[in-house]
Length: 474
Image (cartoon, rainbow, N blue to C red; front, top):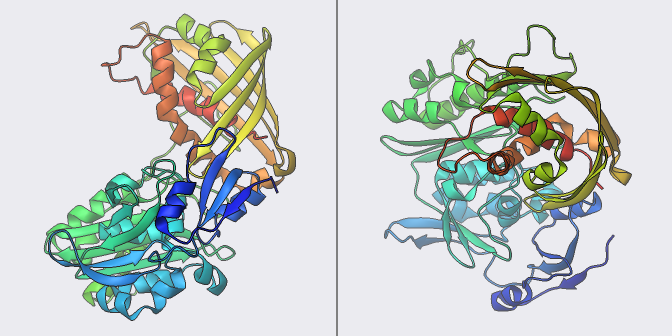
């Protein structure tokens, strides 16, 4: 354990006063600790101060109030445990689907310690509460403001919360019905996929899906169909082509999309009382796949790759990749990047994903340089107790008739230790999360005008670099 201070305030004002910016380290709210303490054990969260909310009055309240629109609304305090929500007669009377959701989280020990606010603040990409909150169209009330669910969830382990901002409770509107179902990973009881369907009235249906890998997301296709006709028939032609899923050792992307369709049908059947056909045919899947690879070189079976069109000539792309100053300016959280030789780099990067924050080093060596046509990158990283990783990336730049570049890339990865247990989905999802910021920075380095839509080809280059810089932690 790292050295830290611990405070247990007895009022909300006292708690908020303790959460002040500190140059020596970070502070963290301690709710049930089911996610934060696990992250601290792994060295992925190192707060200098824990502010325990156990004795702050009012944060465990569960009641029915009058909402801002004058309509009754369900209030669940941020420190209400999953078990207390599941057992609450108030919740069962107002929204029985929420009580059922809470009663199916993890095991009895976790349900008696884990809290609604803690789950929402952590925003795990396979958690149950985000699905229920987003489907219900609830409002997250903090110490500073009120945030609609659609604006609150912003990606993998990322929310709209500002540093020091505290979730006080969640306000749920009236609904005709809400039902949540998940297909569990047996060991952790997290959702391989979970689907929540909320029906607020004619033409008012929201569908939220968790467990796909990139965080909680709404399913527009299913919502549109169910708003027209709320019943099983409406889903007969719905395909998950507007869902983005990632695969790992537990389930492929295609299987996760398949499960989303199955669970959505079961949720609707539970809300309408319709009988599911014993062998109901499922609509064909349309799963987004990785970009096609070059015809002249196949991607490794255990790797990933693609090709994209770049709005820059090969010489400019080549120079940007090799220039240490450009790379440091482009990589989010890069504190230092040194070029030890013409073909060797060393980077120190601090990456934050919600409550997780790690500082790590990665060594990159370039081989087989054929400017400005191709190169090979070899990555080696040590993560101490978390394990290690190594890999190879082959990159080729093909000029196009209009003066651009067609980028081909292939990557092979090998992880060991605890790092390997994080799974491919977390690696893929974290690299995608960094993609937008990296691209914006890299565009500025290359002189792309701010009002010009960024060429999507740079997304591939960013994914290549961000994957690797997010893998090797120290």
